[in-house]
Length: 134
Image (tube, rainbow, N blue to C red):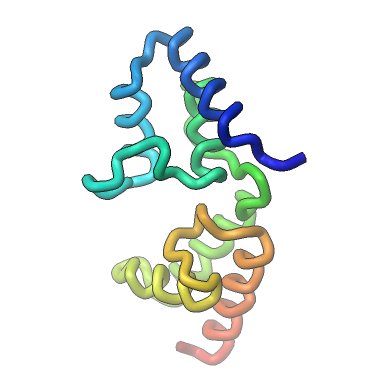
């Protein structure tokens, strides 16, 4: 079943209203969750995966972890990518991992925007770099 963006936006605002959140509060939550740049602080600028994650976060305010939605990378893939990046000593330079993700995932610089397939390619690429000793 395809993702219905309009229905998700309606549900987001409905759930937020029941929780006592206005549009500004929703935007602030989205900005903090996804580290949106100052010029793109709009809920409409979120992709479908991020919109689904925001809705999940608003529905379950006690939840710490953001879940993957609609074909995004799994928690295990995210964990493995972070572990491999740490083993490659890329923790001190996050731009290096972002550049690698962009090369492997056709210009997507953030892991949350990748598909499961693209995350798999990123993992395999990181494993090869680790095997080469880079």
